[in-house]
Amino acid sequence: MMKPTVARAFWFALLENAALTIVDADALYPSPRAQSLVVIAQEEVGKAVWVQNTFRQAWNDEDETPREVPELVMMGLHHLAKLTEAFDFSTISVQDPISGGHVDIETVRELDSDFLATYFECLASEDNEAKKRGFHIDDLPGGLFVVPHELDRPRLRAQICEAADMVMWCLSDDRFLRASLAGDRFPRPRRSRRCSNLS
Image (cartoon, rainbow, N blue to C red; front, side, top):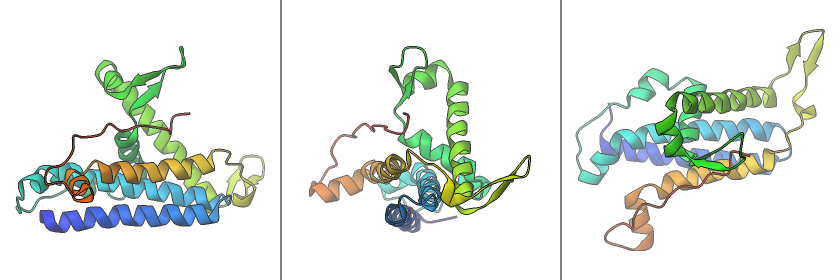
């Protein structure tokens, strides 16, 4: 259980840690270890989204009633769940495999929510495996093994930027932060999120 003021500090700490981890990843680039740090940052964003979803209304109403973030209790140690939440939050369109065009995420959610859940789980699984490969030497069938510094990560630079976008969107999604940064008494209308992680 957390009070909303504590939850807000925790939420900001998660995003700050994600941002600093992304800075470290950028400094390590092009090392595959940077890939591992990018994924860890995405997991922190996923946890921050859980906290924000639970406390958003309380923050808006200045309600100090303690609450529990059920996802943190049930899935706080589950890497795929945190990554799935981060992708769900930051994605606004999905590429159509037939036409090559992009379909609005809410349209996909309405038409086929099961597909979307599977899609995010697939992205999360790929990133989680990339995180492990960036730090560990894994053996493969036939006596082969994978060495982190020999991995080819052609999208690593883009993924560092995309993780930074996740943090930025999570911060800009907060009405009080937007208002304070703009010097406004009332927050501006909610800005739509863009997605660059679906190439």
